[in-house]
Image 1 (tube, one colour):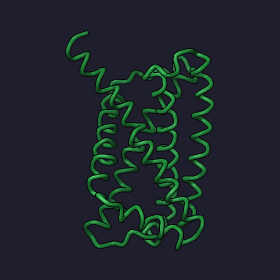
Image 2 (image 1 turned 90 degrees about the vertical axis):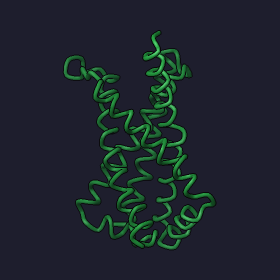
Image 3 (image 1 turned 90 degrees about the horizontal axis):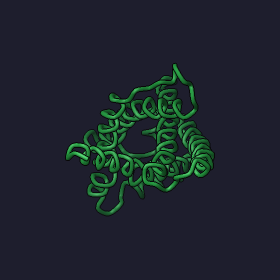
Length: 205
């Protein structure tokens, strides 16, 4: 393998890993924190307050969230632009999953950047308080609420299907049977996390 080929192989492995650890783990935690909104305003404000006041917050945000997330996103866009989708010709379920992984990746990249602007940037630079009312004001517009739902479901699909491909990429699910079993498991994860995410955002509406 050439030096360039070795580098691309390494980048793809890191891309696969970063999508699960730490980005996918953070997504799951973030969804559960937001889900506390279904228990009421005070419950959400308490959970959000814990996250905002974590020790070494900026270090954690930089190295656990933003750097891995944007490496995964930007390199993922590079991969997506090189991808050759053949769903129109073959229509196999695996090819559809491949295609949807790329589409949801682009949607998630745009959505997360927008979400960071409306929350993190507003709190850090414009003096907005990180609480229940911040999210209520964001999704007060029906269009914003609809876009949030699309963004959440896209992010969850990208993570769940990415977990399935991660297990293959890292040689954990080698046989076709194991891949089939985990396709059901990751689809179940997609359904559960989507319900949690959508119920959470609807609690602010």
